[in-house]
Amino acid sequence: MQDLTDEQLDDLIKAIGLKRPRGGSQRKPIAHGTYRGARQHRYRNEPLCQDCRTAENAYQNAQYAARKAANR
Image (cartoon, rainbow, N blue to C red; front, side, top):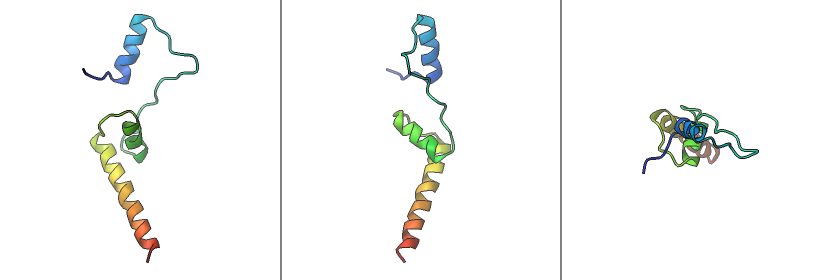
């Protein structure tokens, strides 16, 4: 079974004639190339794109360096 993208899901909901639940909103687009984008991928159980993976690695490396510098 293949997961639908957000756009495909929106199209399907419109085609069937369903309405979104009250108070529910559409998902915000992923902020690709940022640590936040990587978190969004993980929250949605999606594989990380290369830009988000790179941003997350840079963030983790910076955090590691900061902890290492603080312990000196």
